Length: 114
Length: 208
Image 1 (cartoon, rainbow over the protein chains, first blue to last red):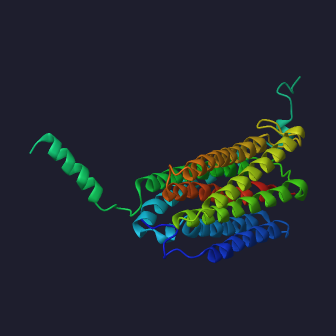
Image 2: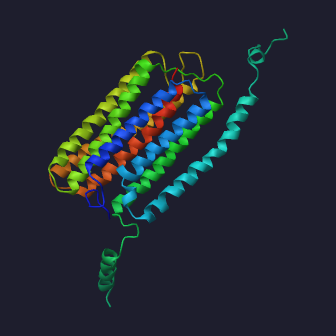
Image 3: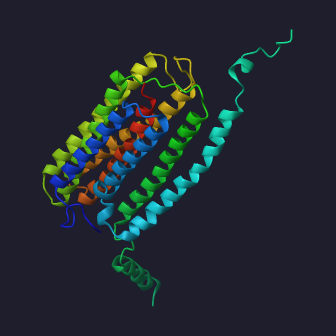
């Protein structure tokens, strides 16, 4: 079992640098939000930055990088597979939008013929 | 060979057999819990994406002050608590007594996060927000997803603070060893990891 205090694990200075990097990611995310990007590029940029931050936490703070590779390969691909499978919802989400009645028609009372 | 001898052989076999993942049982169980919990948070974030895409009258209610600024402070507090947790894990593994101080700092930062979060919720509730009500007139699903996602995250952080307090107390009394701090630390870093997704997706994407 690899321990956090083992010689393979880096010192606190290293983790402080990572922490500063994570704070930097937060600042970049806020700047991008108010930088006038359109919704889709903003979503992609925020997701990419969040994935980088999550990767740092997972591999270094949670020490997955210093564990046996079999632990990584047993856990992470299964999670990624489950999350990728959830992407099947998107066509239905867009279908729901196109199924909505126009606002003018939907605001007409049900007994409008009176 | 008697039944007792066979049992002893099994016990010794279990003790000497190499661990397939190279981690202790409690750490492996924590990893399995984290993966299952990550799938739960993933599903709830996908559900949020679904209702957001499917709601043309989606509301973006968050002003920079106070909500986004409060969210930035909460994020900094939680990220810093991950650093102090790392200090606790390292100090405990090395047998240094400073582990208690690092753990205390982590508990304080976790409590600060909870207070900031509850303060934000109370401000929103006072403005008329609820899981089924949108005071701005848009989709009420905003409140449902916002309170659902941040509530689940908050629940995890409150549970983490309680777990950290219990582990710190028992470690201080010598009833738990450093491996328990490492396992609790895994959980704490995971709630931090979840927030890394919640902040941009739920707060920043709903900023005006």
